[in-house]
Image (cartoon, rainbow, N blue to C red; front, side):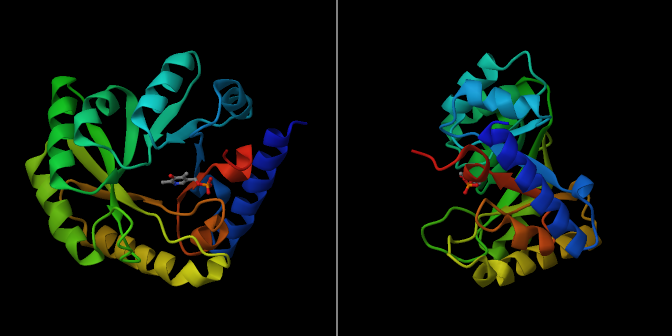
Length: 231
Ligand SMILES: *Cc1c(COP(=O)(O)O)cnc(C)c1O
C-alpha cells in the first residue's frame, strides 16, 4: 500500500470518528483533497481510491491539472484567494468556489458564468478570527453581503460558508471559532433567505479537521495529511 493510500484511509477513519461524535456519519462529510504543489501522478493515486473532490488554491495550476485529468471524474474546488481577472478561468471548470470575499469578485464571476450560461456555486469566506493577515468577510458583514449577492448576481448561487482559522499547535484552541461558524451557518439556514442555500460548511484542514467536524463542518479540505508535507 502506498503512503497516499494509507494516509487516505487514516483520514477517512478519523472523519468517521469525529462525525459520530456529532451524531453524523462520514457520509454527511465531504472530503476535499487539496492537491496544491502535488504532481498529477500522485493525484491519480488518490482518484483511484475513489476521491472525487479536488481543491486547488491557484487557478493556473488548477487549470493545468484539470486538463491533465480530463478522463477522470473530478469535481474541482477553488479554495484560495481568487483575483478578479482570473474569474474567467474559474468559470470554465470550477464546481465550487470556497473563497468569495468581495463584491468585485462576485461581479466578475457572475459576468463570466453568464457568458457560459451556467450557474456558479459559491461559498462565502468568513474571517472568523478577524485575523488581519487573512482574507474573508468580517462575521458582521456576512449577512448584508450575502443578501446583496443573491439579489444582484443571477448566475451565482450561495451554497454556504467557508473559513480558514489560524494555525495553532493545539487545535482545541480554535474550537471556539468553529463553533461560532456553525452557529452562524445554522442561523442563516433557519432564516431561509430566498436564493441562499446553507448546504456546505467548509472548515478544517490537516491540523484541525477533527475538531472542525466535531463542531459541525460538513466539508473539510485536507492536503498534507494525505500527500505529506509540501516542499
Ligand atoms: C492548503 C490549504 C488547505 C489544506 O491544508 P493542509 O494543512 O495541507 O491540509 C486547506 N484549505 C486551504 C484554503 C488551503 O490553502
